[in-house]
View (cartoon, rainbow, N blue to C red):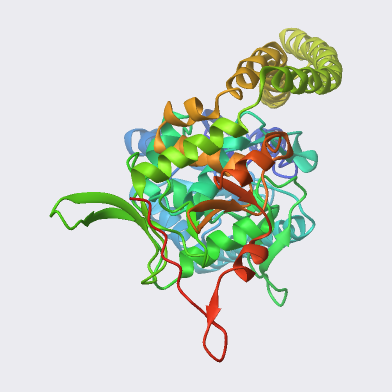
Length: 518
């Protein structure tokens, strides 16, 4: 009786036409019909046939080398299961037969190929070529499917970008903002626009929980349009590529993302060195709109003193120590009295409580889903132990249900964590608003600038020995009149204080205003 080994392969779950079960059936039928004894079976699950870098096929080749005298045939359901690359596959078949005497069999076609026979060799090559043609068509179909999915707004990648979580399965999968990480994403974008060096952003972000690795991970993140609600789509055939709207709520607004891209392609990108000594550098702006730099300047006595300077000669020159003291005075008046902080806290707690109702509802729904999935999992395991389903089907369904369970458990855990810590964090942070100066002084330079951006949400300028801003958050405006009377801070539209600057000459050109706090 002649003997054979068998090779089965499929590239991914759900590949039903060439599934392992069908290949087993087709090859078993041929072996029985031809009275061939099966010696061993080699199976590659989840591997492409574009090359021979597959564990089972390597074991098969090793088995042939050691046991060739006991083997007559290598049986596959179709030659495409063995390989889709015609040239490499034909060379391998030639080697297996010429060196070891083992002939390849295409069970579905009932063909025992002989590489030493020209007609048989031609037919074998033709089957391989047809398989290769099928592979090219499959790749084209996949590329077309990816293109169609992306232009319709689906996110098809397996891993969600930092700041998002992926919920749902298959065509229902979509991105959802991870509210615990989104603030750090926004901080990274705003730090970059403020001129903070990328290495400093990466160092600080790692300290705050950014866990993605790679030397250029921050650059890639800043250039990823997903954060603005878009994704890059490659052109396909005659169809255009470019940025297409993504079905996701953005973490960063489009204008901010575009400003970051403009900064990347700038011929001379601005680099701002940050330090606690000059923590306003890159944030505080001159009345002309240029960010102030910071450096030590030599005085008449020969000693060096720290100053903030505008790059335009004759514009702002501000003594750093006095600028910081003046800012502390501003923040002192903007700090909330305890009764305002408590009232704002009560209102925020009411909003949080209302939001928590929705979160509690989602937690309850998630637990119901988990209970149902766990029942499904037990059912699949029970059917497997009763031999009602084979191992490959069991693995497929077991993995799929476990994936759903892990996704929902992660979402429920995140909601429960937010519910348990939300009130505590809110109370803790509102108490801090009664002393903004202390908050500023007790943090490093990155956090300092984040706090200032939060308070002065449309920027901070300096003119005529006075801080100026187009607006501040409404809750901090309770001492606005006092701040103006003391010439500490004036809240007005940028255009208004620019118009008040003195002019001279026939054309009314601006006279540079030199402001010095010494």
